[in-house]
Amino acid sequence: MTVGRYAPSPSGRMHLGNLCCCLLAWLSAKSRGGRVVLRIEDLDAARCPRAFADLLEADLAWLGLSADEGGSRGGPHAPYYQSECAALYRHAFDRLAEQGLLYPCFCTRSQLHAASAPHRSDGQVIYPGTCRGLTPAQAAEKARVRPPAWRVRVPDEEIGFVDGHLGPYRENLAADCGDFFVRRADGVFAYQLAVVVDDARMGVTEVVRGADLLSSTPRQLWLYRVLGLEPPAFCHLPLLLAPDGRRLSKRDGDVSLEHLQARYTPEQIIGRLAYVCGLQKAPDPRTPAELADEFRWDKVPRQDIRLPEGLF
Picture 1 (tube, rainbow, N blue to C red):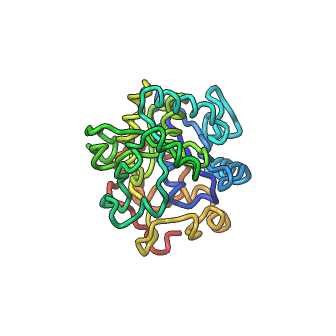
Picture 2 (tube, helix red, strand yellow; picture 1 turned 60 degrees about the vertical axis):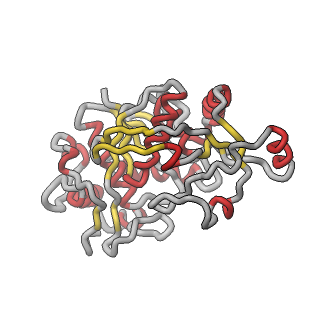
C-alpha cells in the first residue's frame, strides 16, 4: 500500500504553496488506495508553537485533506511531532558516530558565507571542510570558546535516483553538497537527519514535496543507506509562484489560508489549485475526493507555476 505524508512546519498559517503540496501528496496516495500521515516538523519549537500546529490540522480538515494518522489524532507510529523525537534522532546520530562519520564544526555563519567559500548555482554554500581535519585536542580547545555543530563526512560519490515527476537527478556528494549538518550547535537535530529517521519509522513509501528540496534527496538517500533504512520513492512538484513571479512565503503573508477562508469555500480553493496544477481545465469547485480517481502525475506541470492574476 502507498503511504504518503505531509510534513508541514507550523511557523505560521499555510499559504497556497503549502496547500498545493498537501493536495498533491493526498491525491497521489489516495488515487492508489493509500494512506496519508501528518507529521509536524517543529524541530525548532520556539518558532513552531503547538497552537500553529493545531490550527494547521484544523485547516487541512476544513479543506477535506485530513490525514489517516498523525498530528493530534495519533496512531501506530507516534510521536508525530518532531519536537518529541530527540531520543530517536540521538540514536541515529550515535550510529553515524560509531561509523566514524561525524565531526564537530566550529565555523561561524559569516565564515560559511564568505565570498571565498564555494557556492552552488542556487547560492547554497558547499562546505569546504574547514573543521574536517581537526585533531581531538584542537576540537577540545575550540569547544572551550563555543559549542560545535556536528557534520557528517560525505564520500566522493555520485548518488542518483529517478524522481516520480521530474525524472533522473544526480549529485556528487563531495563536489555538489559537501559535509552537511546533522545537529546544530544548540543541540537541535537537523532536518536532513530527522526527515530520514521519521519517514523510515513511519513506513512512508512516497514523499511528495516541493522542487526546492530536490537537491536534498541524494544526501538523504545516502543517509538511508548508511543507517540501514529503506528509502521511499520521491515526487518533487513545481513551486507555486505569485503572479509577479515571486515565490510564495509565510513571511510575506502571501495568499494565506487565513485570508482565503474569508473569501472562498473549501471547494473553491481546491478547485482553483487543481486548475493551476493541470488537474482540471477550469477553476471549478471540487473536493479532494472528487479529484482522486482522475489524478495522474503527467497532468502536473514540471516547471514552476505562476498563479494567474486574479485567480485568488
